[in-house]
Length: 156
Image 1 (cartoon, rainbow, N blue to C red):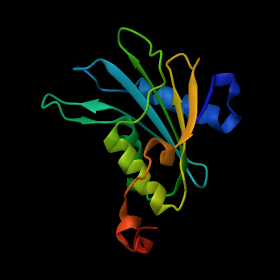
Image 2 (cartoon, helix red, strand yellow):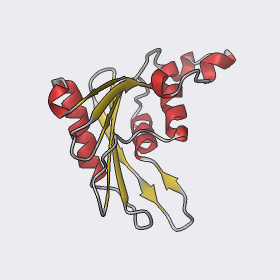
Image 3 (cartoon, rainbow, N blue to C red):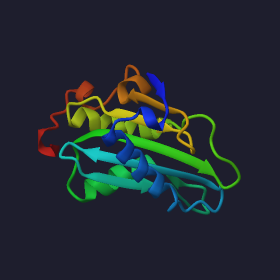
Image 4 (cartoon, rainbow, N blue to C red):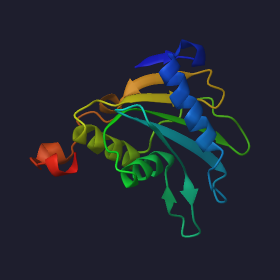
C-alpha cells in the first residue's frame, strides 16, 4: 500500500481518478447524500464509470459494481485497475474511500476471471490523499470461482 497525493500519480492513474470524479457527480443519493464515483480500466485501455444509485427500499448499487455491470453489459470482463472517490453533500472526505465488502468480492472475482491483480486507486475528495493498492491487498485470502475449480474459459 502506497500513500501519495494526486501529483504522485502517473498519467494513467490520474485519468482513471478524474473519470471516477466525474462519475461521482452523477450519483443518485437522495437518502444518504453520499456521492461515490468509480472508474474501471479494461485491459485494452477503455474506461467504464459508475456511480452509486439508491432507492426507497434502502437498496443501493455501489459505484464500483455499477461500473463492472456497465462494462460487462458492453462485453468487457478483463480489467487492470479501478479508482474510487467520494464526497458527502455536506463535507469532503478526509480519508480515502475504499470499496465495501460486496464490491471487493465482485472486483476480486473479475480479477480472477482476467488472471490479474487489479490496481486500486482510492482517493479523498480533494485528492490530497490517494492510496495505491490492489484488490488482493483489499481482500486478503479472497475466495472466488477459481478457488472452486470452476472453468471460467467460457466467460473470458
